[in-house]
Image (cartoon, rainbow, N blue to C red; front, top):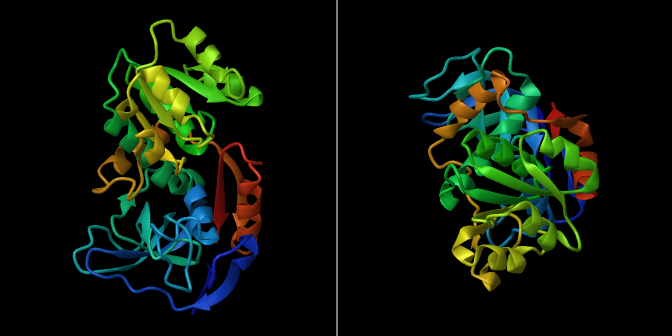
Length: 301
């Protein structure tokens, strides 16, 4: 038996419990890892609370968590890594535990910390996916809502590196941090539309909403076309004709090796805000729901 965080009904963070579970067995192409780090993502909290019950129905008990980095412990038929390899990837059946299954394990570059390795998976692939769905090209102007958040922070860096002009809406305390990435940071809140217009002399071509703060109607007005706006955070997207981008972060996992190498080379920054023990999973959810964080929260089983 091994330890994992589980929940057996929707609710507040307190539904998360430390439980004894049977370690999962890898199927064809899968590997089991001894988890060294597991990223805590906003989607984990939406699933736990029941907010995503219609899109991601739970089969209780649930082990939460989407991403993990660890050492390969067992290998299924056809897997391309070996026991003892250090890897990262999206998990099958949850990551908040001592062991987890990965469908497509990617080698962890030497020098990349466990915390960053685990934190790259969902947020990095989501950022790349949405930039691709928007068709963002060099020379265009992209507005990123929530530019200081986990996904937005990576989207800004990836877009700037591609020659895209980026404007990011942020809180007052994050202006300098996002501006240091090469973006124009503007304060969100009342008057944000006017501030964005002042910063974008040639107009806004595309909008990536990673905040879900009720900005879709004005974002459509700014671009003139709902097809040029994508959200990953606002469930009212359809009311505005806007695409809601969800699902698997990267259907084939092709972008993860690139992201890992960029991070290892210091060309992609993934800020780690705080680490928690496995028994502190509920506290991690509480802190993130209170928006106390400025970077990724990571569990260290």
